[in-house]
Image (tube, rainbow, N blue to C red; front, side, top):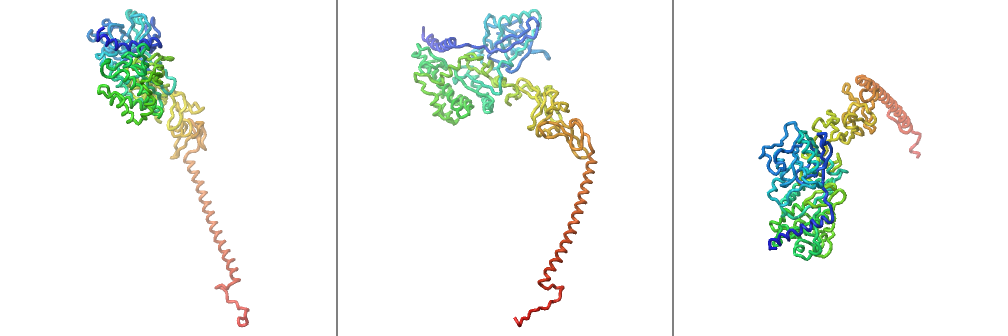
Length: 599
């Protein structure tokens, strides 16, 4: 074997070892969505289809269309426009799902050609009897990079027998209508989504690395909002494999692995004689794992997103900055404890297991509903592997599909993700236009009709037509407010009226939600209350006030007379007492009986 052959063999060795190790210890699980044939009757029913790992599946939603099998270019490897074929739907017609045969070219190229001809989705019929596989994009084909990034329609692989049924029905002149359903592709058990990203720090691995780095930068903002709000729990992971013990002393394993062949990655440039080695990538992967762990200890796990995006910008391989020195500068700039990260990383040269990397290798093996992680990058949402383009909008839909309905955060309810069904006929839900209150609530999967909470006031009812306040069901509005403060909103659904400038209401702020006619009125409190008129009430109160004023004046006058008489009586008494001890101006001088000279 020549030098070139030896070089190729050396490059291929790690990949062969990876394949061997995976086949020995795990299983690959194909992620599926439901495909339902609506017509014709002869093939009506549900069928499995494998979601393509490119394009944008409508996670959380569904799509109906009419299947078309082209007369020419049935494998889809050529441009359909060159044959004068168009799949654009006519106004009012269902979208077109193009059926093509497997073989002769990349799956992604078939979908790209169909998309350019106006297809809404693509079904690829297998040409052999075998279990469904995941259609993936080419690894290192630079020519394919442009069209892969621009595929926006969903695609799915169907098995050979189902493909033959579709072709037979179409050949008989039947109209084949199908529905692709992704609503259960992601489990949605509760109000928090757990998702993980299997990634790589290598930025020289071609098209997929470029797409991964672009995604990390684009999705960072949404990831931070979801994590900081407590809506999601994110965990990053990194794929590694090991060298068989017989090869651990070889040059290839030494340059590609840490800890004596236990944790390996392929050479970034696929050139052992220059540039970075696989072990450099494993070391940075380990550092990024430890960044996440240390950040998580500070209850700020989202710092991982800052680190990986900053590291990609500041420490690229092309500029020969990829390594420890640049990484530590990024760590310090983010305020992380460098010593804790170094302790977490351990000794990469030790002939012993690294606890962090060993845990990662064990996590690669599929458990429960999740298969082995074999495709890089891989997104896992609620323990189900995501299939499709790694792009902000598509991934947001997949994550939002993982929330229990009505618990989605606001990021899932923007125009790019939510359905906005409430904009059309209020979604068929109850609505009080006067109070500007509606029971329609947009969710990621559609809309729900639930009586709302407005200004802290809980409305009660079914949200459609027959809602009521507490036990009273014969009320004027379909949804009625209940609880303290309910009278502020549409008078609580109770009777109310203004008479001669005086407002009367049967609404009482209480938890029982009952309507009670005010004093002096009789009725059900909901539709009517009858009683004295406002003018009579007003005049009655006027007479009362007049009597009170007269009584007040009489009492005041009596008090003044009483006070004057009391004062006169007191004055006379005081004068009489004083007269006994000293002469007053009005009395003559009394002769003294004492002789001063004799004293």
